[in-house]
Image (tube, rainbow, N blue to C red; front, side, top):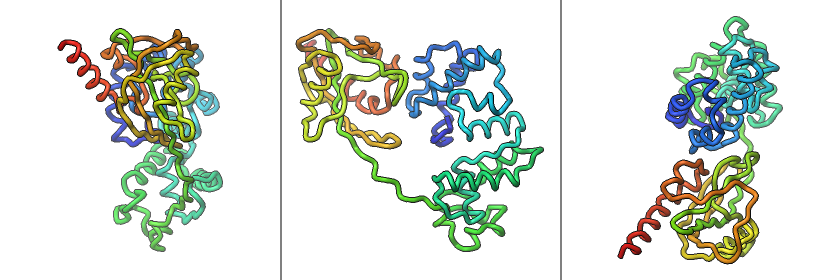
Length: 325
């Protein structure tokens, strides 16, 4: 959960997750949909899928005991060098250094490493330095201390150098370069895509479908739709997308909302429309369902969808009042 996510964001999700899945056995035996629902809102859903798969492998292949050999643990789904080093050094005492974002920043400032912090060359240089100074008897304690130093003192902005135990030997502090180290080359501009979604209503129920298990937002549920073509109006795009995706026409009744949502490598501007089925029978190879509005909360949806759920609720409530009149 802490991969690319801040501690204060993770804490409530972690507590809820552990209440629902208090043991590896419970996690391994749970349906993937329940795991994704518990993860809902944290983003980077491949982490949840990999965690679930890893739990099943540990339960079946290793009889419920998390493997302590680096090669075995590293081979579990979703386990990279950072996760392997953190877990095995802290949990099993293996002498492997951790080089997360906090540690990379500490070492680049401390040692005056001026390469781009995102580059493989800089990461390898930091890793080699840490490996040379890592105490074999207390590697976990050392790794935790380095991560905490970066999180609490050697912050990206306004670092607390006065409280840092290494300030007398820190290159960046002595040279007045804490603001310029570590080096981060400029990222390319993040593209923004226009997309149109259809909330299809029929007999008091809403059509939803499940995304493929692999790929972006895999396993989550969604409303049909997709990207707008260049210069294509959103209300035309939603009709076209539904025809291509579902093999059926939809009739646009009203525009429900516009929301923007940022992902790691792109942004999306969603145009959401209330629709009803038109000509043709809906045909899709994906799992799908017609559900009542109240049942939407039982399905894991992407965060972007949750941004227009309040408008959808208000729309449906208003339609109910109008029918009663």
